[in-house]
Length: 418
Ligand code: TYM
Image 1: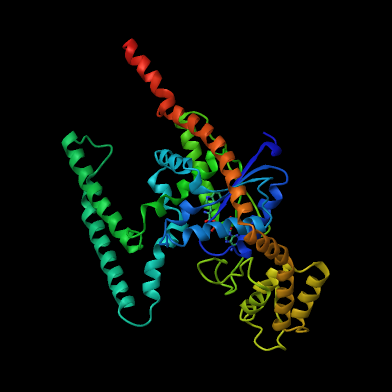
Image 2 (image 1 turned 90 degrees about the vertical axis):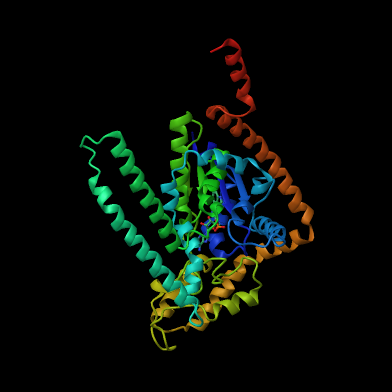
């Protein structure tokens, strides 16, 4: 398959505003790829409902996300833009792929663990009241129970000798006791990680993502670095499916965007909608300036006269995307020699960001005034998706021996007495 035949798929969640991390990590690349490839871009509302959300807010958030991606440059006449829940085959394929997805692989997903642990972290982060103490007591108790279970399982594990001549009854008894203890231990550990209260859907999130990609047999996936582990899972699931049911799915690989990982304005974590450390692509100019003022810089630059280190400064790393060549070199030099202060450096960055975001804001304004243009684009996208999705699902169901397409074959075999 040559590059031009590669199909592109990517998605974005509708929870929260689209920020410059999303733009530089993924969406800018989406726009470029739409010039050369067949592309499917999706606002993933089915993913967004895997955590707490307000159903009354969801339609507006989803529409906003679609409008913003279009304002960023996605043209529905040149690529397929759609909303995940408008194509129900995504969830159907998820269920079918679940059958070839090992539980162990899902437990390794760091994003699930991070999201699931958030509740526990929030409790631990509380300085006042009993929440923190009771979370710590709870952890201690859960940990102690897990240790007791390990001790209890030890004699059975040691007694199990794969080379020895155990009777069937002995084996059944040992295996059942070990399994019971391990099962209980798993439960305790999950509670310890804050996992047990997370929804099954959150756990299954990466399989839905694999289904998104595989439904369109996409081979190129433009995403930020944080999605690499999910893409690996997608490849594992496709491979297991192909080995079990025959070659249906291609291998999907990541396409890097301009920036694999943009740090938030706090300088410590990745820029993220939920952490409030972001600059939205639709933030007005004065908001961009306001948000940059307190943003984290080189911590050694305490006074205006202290020389700075642009190579470790998050503000400088943003300049690399928003400020042109010569000016960039001047800024680095000015920082190193304390020729310019952080205040002015941030002002220049705000101007660069605002220059880059201006056309996006303008298109967003125009689309807000013409919502039908967005809705028509979506409907056009949905139709194209349904075509491709129906064909893949027919192939998948037939390979797995289910669905209307193969029941006739079953009837004939019964008739012949096979
Ligand atoms: P989401 O909505 O978290 O992010 C959308 C895209 O933006 C990238 N990104 C970043 N890149 C650089 N720096 C950052 N600080 C940053 N924050 C976010 C993400 O890597 C992503 O590319 N699970 C996905 C959505 C999804 C998807 C898919 C993607 C669902 N199905 C199928 C690709 C293929 C997500 O939550 O993205």
